[in-house]
Picture 1 (cartoon, rainbow, N blue to C red):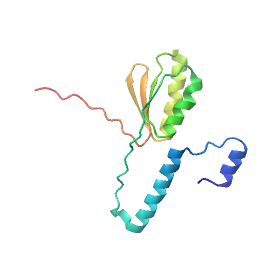
Picture 2: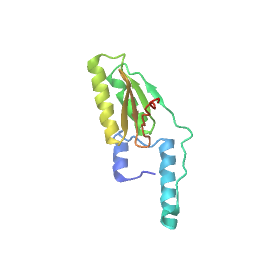
Picture 3: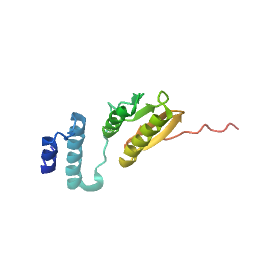
Length: 135
């Protein structure tokens, strides 16, 4: 668990974000994997699968909803953001902020159509498959 001095100070100030149960589980799995790797070296291959991965679809009505979008990305969930219902200034602000957060997390962004974008964390790759030319 996170019990550092900085974490305690942030908790006292009410700024502690904390870890949700999924993040605690991932943190525990990473520590277990590191222990096994230390013992057996590079002979260990991770077979971890993500059974309960959710794709989040968000249609923000204003900039105030951008934090919720970034929280999904922090939890390593892919997010489809539909800003077609917002005015152009608000949609630009939302997309700029979410793209900055995605970049900071080494994530990816793909435009799906006008006003609809896919944002993913670094554990997802966006692969665009081109239709094969018919001969």
